Length: 114
Image (cartoon, rainbow, N blue to C red; front, side, top):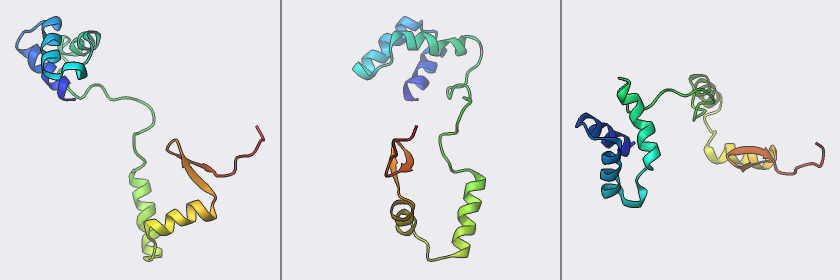
């Protein structure tokens, strides 16, 4: 994000993509984005789309914190105020036999069925 903001700054100064990449390499050294990336990121600025954030993407949202889920958790806590993260974790792991693998809960005992 920081490099994108600096790239926009260089674009507004009238720097070319190559000059911009050289500046980014001076500042960020090995962590600088590639020259191809600089060219790609400059396209929207040249087309008049000056949003540094980039275009909204389709697909699954990055979080499960949706208004619906927040309301469901609120209702659960209202029903039983003794619920805690440890309590819920214990239920998920011990009673439901789920464990976290690759950021998803899956059954602890995998079957051979396909």
